[in-house]
Length: 267
Image (tube, rainbow, N blue to C red; front, side, top):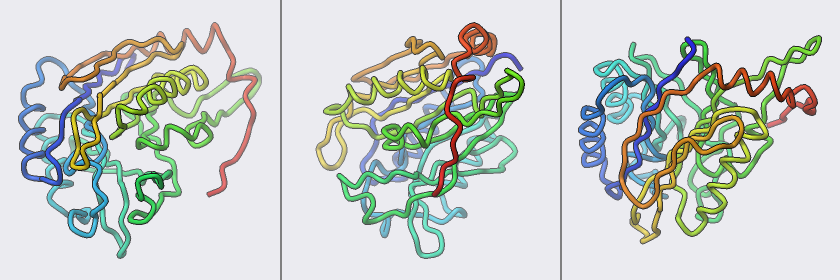
C-alpha cells in the first residue's frame, strides 16, 4: 500500500494509423520487464493528435477500448491513455482508465486547444476524474489542461488542522510540441509544488502528420518539485516506484495546504 509502480511509454506515433499503433504498443507493453502496476501512454496514442474525429473516433465498444481492456487484463495492469471517442453524436478527447478486471472509467479533456482548432471538433468535459488504486488517489488530465491550475488544484477537507488532500498523483497524457517544451516542463514542476503531489507527464516524441516535432520530455516529479525522471528526444520505456512515505513526509513537514484557499469550481 505504501508504494506504487508507474511505467511511462514515450513513443513516436504512426499518424492516423490505428492498427500500427496498437501493434506497436502491444509489443512495447509485452516487453516491459519487472513489476508493473500502471502503464501510461500518450494523448491520442492510437492516432496522434488528429483533428479528424469524423474518420477515426470510436464508441466505447470500439476496437481501441477493447484492446485496452485486453491488454490490461492480460498483463494485470492499469492501462491509461487518451483516444477519440464518439458519444451521442459528439466527439471527445477521452482519457481511458482500464483495469485488469476489464472495467473502465474515463475523463473527457476539459480544456480544448483552440490554437489548433480542437474546440471546433471536440466537446469539452465537465467533470474531474479521481481514481483510486492501492490507497493512492490519482487525478487524470490531458495535455492543455496543464495550463489551467484551478482545474487541477487540490480541493482539501480541512478539519482541526488535519488536511485530507484530494489526490496523491497528478497524471497528464500529452502531445505537447517541442517549440513550447519550456512551458511543459515548468508547469509540471509548478503543479507538483503547489499541490504537494507527485506529477507524471507522459508525452510523445517525433514528428506528427503536420510536421510538428515533439521532444517528449516525459517527466516524473516529486512533491517538492524535484525531477525524478526526464527523457527527451528519444523513445523510452521507464518504470519508477513512488513512495507514499515521501509524500506524507513532505505534507507533514511543510503543511502549506492548511493555508490554501477553499473554493468551488463551476462548470
